Length: 351
Image (cartoon, rainbow, N blue to C red; front, side, top):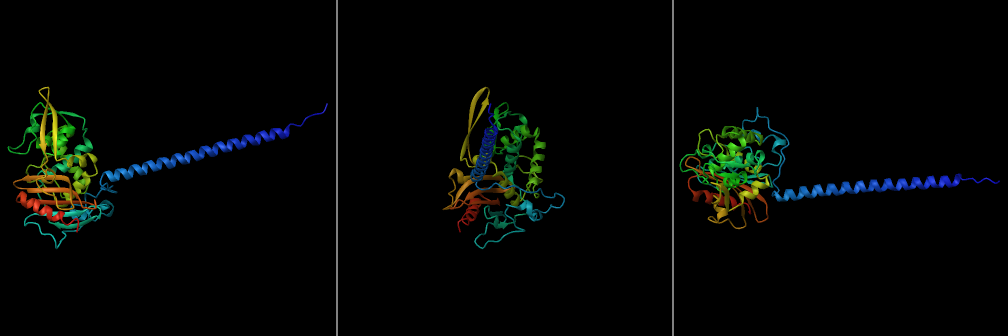
């Protein structure tokens, strides 16, 4: 009988199987590359959209300052890694086109250009009044839960007579979200107290958290005693520190969305019934009481007024090209002076 040699057929099958395995691995490898590219595109697109949503104001601080050597605010700005992305100046900045009222402090910051366009008494101690609530807001966002329900206590309402309050009453049940809107839109001191007590466990501990946050962002000329800004000789800040705090707050969508509201209706539970409190913004640009200069859009910020702090305002605005600016006026003797001088600053952002 004649034998049949099957070796060639086996070799052909082995080679075919090897080619098939190679094709499978090539497909798998190509698929992994495509998936990786897709994921990277999604991440980059997300970062781009987030950057646009936050008005190109999202800055990451590379390092914390050395608290042992940075007691002077001007010294803080010499820390190159820390100051990356910030408007930096070693002192006041003159501008031939600007002259705010005597006794006032103020500044104009080109956020995108990282430049101080004007600065008067930027590093001198000032009383912030309700400008304080910018920092109160930052700590509330970072460490609070806006879905929490807070029951208002007598401690929350222990405020000097005549101070700005939203009208909360003992026993009211209100969410942190509603309190935050009452804090930032209407500048309610009762809202500030309730937030501080709830988030910090006590008012004193919350204020400690605020001062720690101030140091963390380089605001070394700041020392706060309370979460609302009612006067205390040991409750102070500087114009430059206010810039740092507002610049930090603008990283949070929640802050940006809330600060732009011209009014807000706070909803809460009172005596087991739903109650509404209508609140107007304290910012006259947002309410239409003060006209914005041509080509300028005021997005919002924070006001402050006490007899010793004077009239104060810190705002974010955009010029006709959509470029962001922060402007601050402190210690104005009247509301008219405050908005006249703020308009002077805002008129510069399109020049």
